[in-house]
Length: 278
Image (cartoon, rainbow, N blue to C red; front, side, top):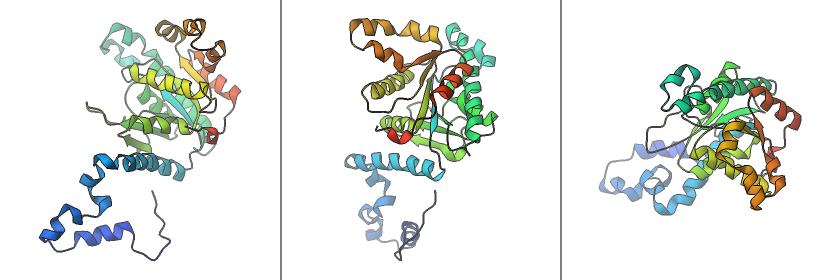
């Protein structure tokens, strides 16, 4: 990120350096004497949460704007989906059978990134959660094509590091799930959802809710693995119960291959991401 000084006053970096050189006295050692924006104890106070929310939203927003990224293709999916070569070591036999979705995710990301390269890496940029499994496959596929990709990581109780295929200066880390999910959707021109667990379901249903209620412009939502999605969710039962309308079943498409997904996105065109109102 680049700061452009347009005023004659000292900027924040200059005063940070000056503050490090002040004499060591009881007064300067007091927490109250620290510059507010360098005081992590102060910044982490309970009543500073609104400021932290704003900073977390702004940091990613500014970085993506400075890279000129206009639209993204979102890839949601399970962190536990193994690469095919690791299928035998999966925690369950059923999980190992889902390994082909790693391949489809990688292929899909490569195909979309090839399109992105034609726009100067401004449209169709792959964005994942930055972790393992389907997320890793997405970032790897973008790298296969020689393009960039975004990783939106989040701090979790267990060790969580970004996969090695995310473009380094587009690797972000979040404290707030809500802000992270906003960044997934703010530039989305298409959303793909691969088999996954609670996190994937949460991301899918929030997206569907936003589009259903008119809070987000409609974009293609592609569910990879029709058999998987029909087995875990009885979509028709929701419509028959009247809790959703029959028309809501048209908010998403089932696909089984990367080629199918790309064809649907091509047919839909690229919506204007500025219409999103999340």
